[in-house]
Length: 259
Image 1 (cartoon, rainbow, N blue to C red):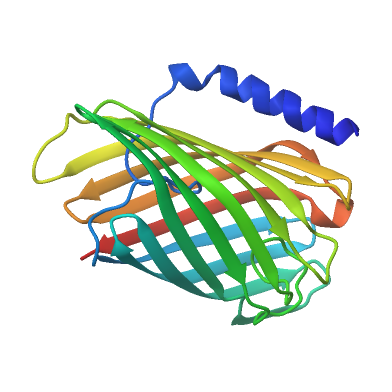
Image 2: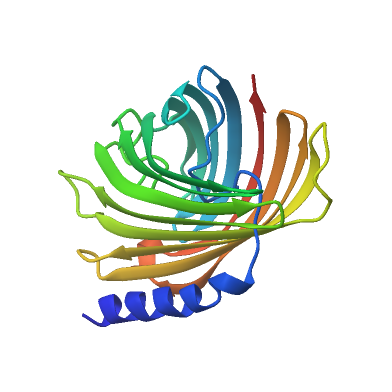
């Protein structure tokens, strides 16, 4: 019960500040409901170097996204993971392959601004080793179901995500909340050229493990035409997790190309 109260209080505190913060462009560790025209492809990667209580992991996904239409997206994420565990074990292998689908069910456009919402599911296949590290390589089937809402204007944008991750054969089910803000540092121009700052929060509540964590990621992004380059550093603000699941820090480096 104390974790549910803490979760709700933290969610409310962060929400109070949402009106005064800014964002634009595709988030780095969060998600957004903004979609381009139908028939477009995006190839991207977001390499994560994660340090935890049980070891160090480098997660390298190849992500292929296809927009079926302006309101429907499907994707496949094929990742590899290398690891050095605290007990001296090391190696590398295919991690858990993920299948993503999103459907936009609400769109409200105005002059220089838009608000959109999408339903989202992420199906994780048990193709990786059972390394016991969340969202990277568990060797267990997982189903994530949620929605993403986002507001974007020429000056700023805000993204919000709420979802539930279910593992039928495990005890790592969690409720997840993400909130992302960012600030464009350059005036809008064509062809697109932009430098964006991102301020992104992730909350995860694991009721079976009686664990809770609040992570903060500070990121910067350079966008040029249809290419972006991302850099972010993530650290825990609250870390009430079981000892063997403690998160220390992550460094993200990514790029994406849309055509």
